[in-house]
Length: 260
Image 1 (cartoon, one colour):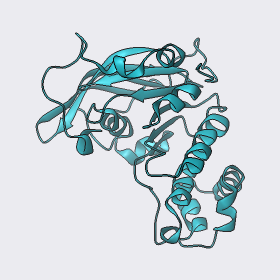
Image 2 (cartoon, one colour; image 1 turned 30 degrees about the vertical axis):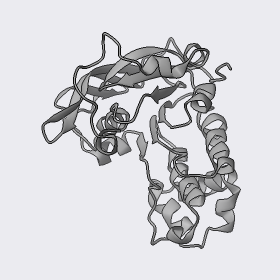
Image 3 (tube, one colour; image 1 turned 60 degrees about the vertical axis):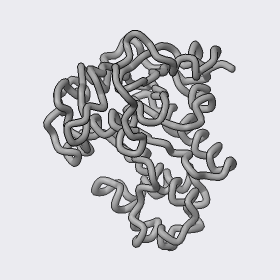
């Protein structure tokens, strides 16, 4: 198996930089001194066991969780203390686990809510081109659609013009295999083709994710225990990379629901 990632611009400065970030919940440290950089056009796979801190890192980048130390920079600007809505305006798109849609609104209304002023028609067209099923459901209340259709709607947020960083957490969770494949095709063909965007994806289907990724980071107990090309990671036994590492944090795993 080999990675087919589109490849980023290695000469360009990073779109996203995470510098020495530590963070947690209620006094419990989940992330410990995490640093990484993602350049325009790069798709990064963030993998690791449940409770390793993957979802927590995405929350720190999007501003949902404030770190106890370290910095988050977008296009060189320090965003560490900025609220989530300000980061969204700066181009940070976070699609969290769990069907992030307005369930009481129609598909069309959801897309209008996601789009910046003046962009809703373009987003509507792009979303329905990427996911033709949404065209048939445009007047349907989102909460009455299947889980797969709701996830397609949630993923459409990544198509908003002006996105600079796209964070996607477990997009395939709980979906039928045919829908899972459509989600991965969307990530590879519709998003990774945008060479201005930096992407970090977390997903349970690690081998499939590595096929479309350029780079990979393995997270273990709140630290990055391995980093390199997705092709290198996919050519070996992925789960061997999850084993204890001298650079891993000491102590027990945190709860998988809270920490991710």
